[in-house]
Image 1 (cartoon, rainbow, N blue to C red):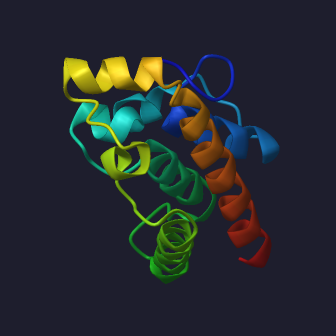
Image 2 (cartoon, rainbow, N blue to C red):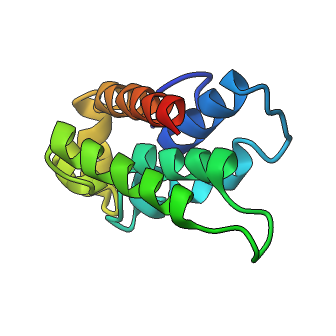
Length: 137
């Protein structure tokens, strides 16, 4: 059950791509995104590409202390969420893939229908959206 690049999953891929584009390297990337993949660890949560994109925005626009405003970051996250939903019709992994990854049947469907290609498409779309948002920030 892989997708995207370097056999990484959706959230890992998006975070890694944005970090690398911005010359950020850490052994924690993509590790900190792993539990967000597959709809938040197969719990039918938000799409991992989207949550990886939010992590990437946090990496670039997040605050370092309580004296810094959250407004710039929050606006970017809201914009990403809105644009992702408009582009794909949902924010949730199971709806975007048409299967429930929390079940063996859904995992089998994911593999048999090669839905990793869909995850790759969603990840690439999210990378593009994050890059556009960061260019405007």
